[in-house]
Length: 246
Length: 253
Image (cartoon, rainbow over all chains, first blue to last red):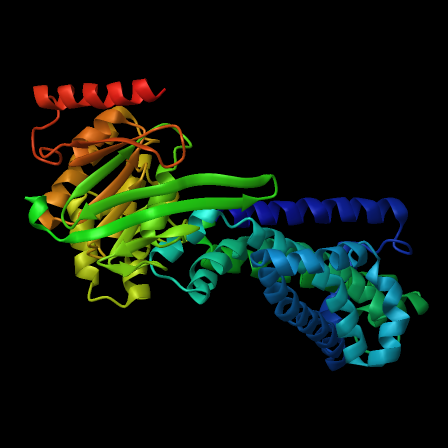
């Protein structure tokens, strides 16, 4: 209940600062929250707006799913096997610092200008964040926990189910929360190329028509998408990692 | 009484060497030990003498570099369903409640235990009201009781305790020693306890194995038939035997 009030207070302060900025800069540069709110309500009544929102949401969710399904199992494996980690470590350390976004032209050439190219690009960026966090979390599983599980007669599968996965889950969810910020930022970039649907295109299109309130509608929608994802991972952590919240 | 029980576990000329990046570490060198069913043994000695290594070998979690560990006459090469281990740092899983921690061994081993058995054991160890709590909500003594419950619920023939009460205050430690003794009187399992604490060794070990500084060296084995009996602590015999164990250890130092 208290956190809900804190949320409302933060939103109120943000709106006040925004409104003050709009008064100071003028509506032609910074549309105020009231004008943007009115525009958002009218836009929400058109099917085309929801097509943009749906396209962006679909791409983000698909990229999160693809990176989760590839990076998390690999991270758990590398963190649990010293031998595999020794082999993979130089490769990860050499490729991780390279900004993946520079591969956008190559990715679009290989996977096409459609949804796949964009989803793969987003996934590539999320992949390393998830991989490294998960690997480090799996490496941090203490020897005592392993001995304890094996002394109960557990197999390697039991170790994974009862020890490695639950101990890594909070780190995985934290990585996903951090990744939401990155994925929404990169989404804007990848949707500026080769598409007519998505919030990236929506904002650029509004910019081209000098429709400032519409630009801010796009920004608000992207922000809400980020908040929604962040909150979802927060809820998942509260449900599945209750022990970590004590 | 214990002499009438058959041999439960034996180390025959066991050597254990750990290979590390800094070179080999010799933890045990041709050590011989035996424990009968229903008998309790306390291994006491200075740090680095190999006591914990012996316990890991007896649990089947480690394999000897040379020699053999036999459980009920068969070579022990992996953890056995009749052997349970309690670790110094409790070995509890923070993501599982007390109830789930205690049930885990049963569900893995597919034993005959039930939720009722788990609850009865938690009640026996005075932690029934904590069954829905997570380990981080418990005190050190309560955590160790959960670890003990998790081992006892498996109904083991051999219970291994690796410095189980080292991190606890004196009163809690003595209370837990009494609870282990009471659990032994009820079930008569074989038990091997590793400890630094002389009085703990005397309270719980019917056979006290005093180890020297060299890896796996047994300086002496002291017979202590009154261990685990009621009202033993505080008796003249208890203090005499504590002095004897201390003498052995001081001579080795």
